[in-house]
Image (cartoon, rainbow, N blue to C red; front, side):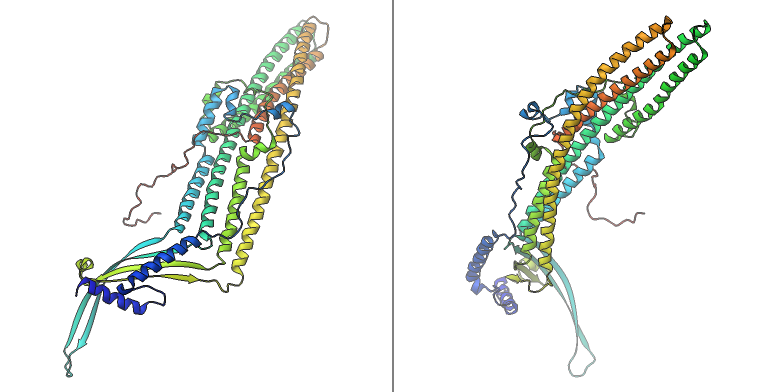
Length: 522
């Protein structure tokens, strides 16, 4: 029997098994083609439909300017790109670049970006048909007894081979898959913002800990200088005591004050070591790896103030946490449409074509060919209210994300206002501390001269030295606070890393993904 004859016979037999509306047989191929084209055209037209809300970015009412900002700071937009470079500290710049490459929190955020992108590609695949190959080989054996009551029997073995393709396509009549793809795309954008937020936090943490470390170095050096000066005063007191011009009480008070100043140094050393260890971990290193580089010393970074803050509306585009909250809101809105579409009928187109032969070689020539094609309609009739409840769940989640977006905006405004007030007030405090330290410095110099000349008692010297050390230590602490507030202001305004970040590189590369013998591992 020829191949065409086999095809006609198989298609005719197949037609007897098809439900009404299925297409089969050569004698109706033209009509079938017309129906197929019509069905595909209708499917494409209906596939443009969608249910559920169409997302629009919320319009929020924001103040015209920050309450703590003056006219000068609102007239210009803040320069947030590489804001830390304005400290003019090469080591700080290097540490931030190293942290961006080696920080583990950033690596985790990159992995989440890769996950979201893969999920998006996976979701996009639902919009397209799926095709799979189906091959099979079977061997059948039948045994029959001979006629006439004889005990003789005969057996026959038949081999059958089949090759074919199955295809299916869910027509997205009401946009369920399209809404799912939309939600996945918003999810990718949200994880991108999460990565930017991780970088913003990282840059701020590196800069803050660097400032703290330099500040502790400065305070340690101040304590050492003050203790050395107090030892000189103690030596002078001892000389005067030996000459009968000072009492033993003066000698004891001088030694006690020197020891008290030196006692502050170990605590400062502990805090300095903790800041350096945190810096090392932030850059992805072992805690002690930066100790040698930081021991070379350096000044406390000085910010350039005042700094423009712009207007509150700027944070909607500059803050990654605000942008992330808005993308999550968009994603939850798309999921409402996805849940709503599940309440509507679904139509799938399925089809297959198969060729069967007694030998593998027959599949290409002397074989029977059968095919089928047709739609499947699924209509949800009763599900105990589950689908409607799923829509309500999605709507409640959307409401939560909307509130979360509003909260993110308010939190950003609050952080900017706090940073503006803290920076402005610390500038005033710093100027007063400069004047205070200078005054106590003069008082200490005069008191030592007067004490050496015998004009005043030693308690006046002790009080002057104690006041000078306290004022100078407060001045150093104020420098640290000024730099820290400047960092906090840049973070609050949304200043972070704006360089290139490669989120596609995996942390672990799987070398062998192919089939192989299974090996049990502990």
